[in-house]
Length: 167
Image (cartoon, rainbow, N blue to C red; front, side, top):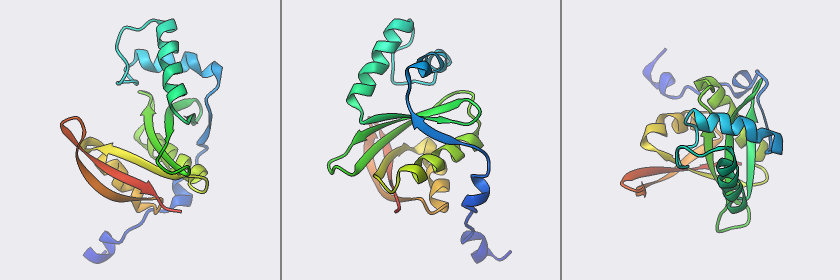
C-alpha cells in the first residue's frame, strides 16, 4: 500500500455497523442502569457519593435542561447522549456519556448509529476534549462528521475541538 492510499483510507460503514447497536429515548426503567453506571464513575460531572434518590433528582434536572436523552444500547445499555438545542432550532449540541462496560468498538458503533439515526433531523454539534480527539477524527473518517474549529479553553483550561455532522 502506498503512502497516499494509506492516508486516503476510509473505513466501511456497512461493515462497522453489522452488529446490532441501537438508540432510543430514555425510559424510567433505565434509571437503575444509569445509577449503576454512576456508581462505577460514568457521570463525571455529577458529585460523587449521591444516593439513588439524589442521583435521580440530579439526572432529572439534566433531562429538564436538555432537549432529549437517548440511550445507546447493544445487548444492554452502553451509553447515553444528552442533547440540547443550539442557537438554531435544527442544531443539537450533544454530550455523550459512556458507561464503564462499553468497549471501544461499542463506543464507535454507538456514536455512528446515533449520528446516522439523527443527522437528517438535526445538525449534530459536539465538543471533544484533547483526550477524545483521536476518537472524533476516527468518526470523521466514516464521513459522518467534520471538524470545524479548535476553541481555546472550551473546557476550563483545556482546549476543545468542535465537530459537526455531515448530512
